[in-house]
Length: 131
Image (cartoon, rainbow, N blue to C red; front, side, top):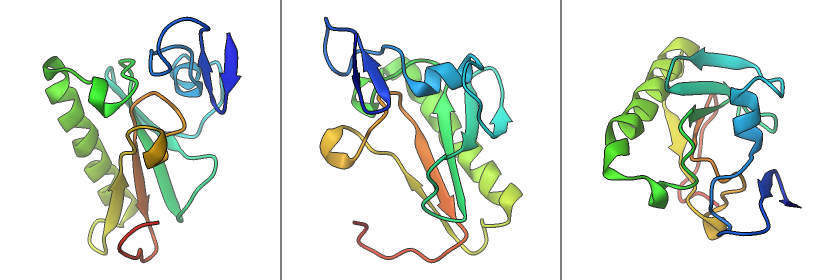
């Protein structure tokens, strides 16, 4: 096993193969996190390196490395991630002013943990286009 950023890869297999990630360890409660929402399929927790006053990661418990690796059977789960993010935005009081959802897919897009996740960002104004 070799370490690359926050993600652990087994020495065999593709770099996007689901292996041990920091998110899977949070899901199993092996690492601490400030959990903001949880049900059978989804967990949401505060980002440890926030880029906005509200920065929450919305993560499926099912191990899917990237959006490109999601299957047709994952359509309801992908929709649920958006629904949970919307509910959290309302809970934090940022829904009326606006918020941003970010889903990075792959290295060049800035994905550093290969466990699919949404970033819910809010509490400040954002510029377009993003960096």
